[in-house]
Image (cartoon, one colour):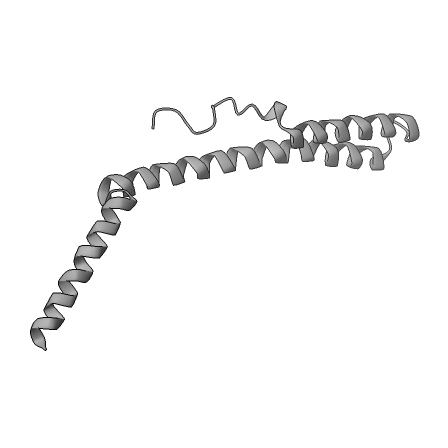
Length: 107
């Protein structure tokens, strides 16, 4: 495959989960600005946790993209090596017929 299953840019900013994480981050930042002092450690922790949520979504998208591309490449190789469903069913049917013929000869 020349291009990945998902475009290299990812397009993650348009995903619903990412947009929701952005809303949570923005709401957290607003809440912290309003209710905590600038130097408060709780404020830093809450902001960092909200930021991590956005970054984790991006990381998970990259991992999922990699795994999907890997699986597609493997399926392509298997298809070229073993054929599609029709070819495999034909081989299995012919193998079963040969097995039955051999058993009938022994009888």
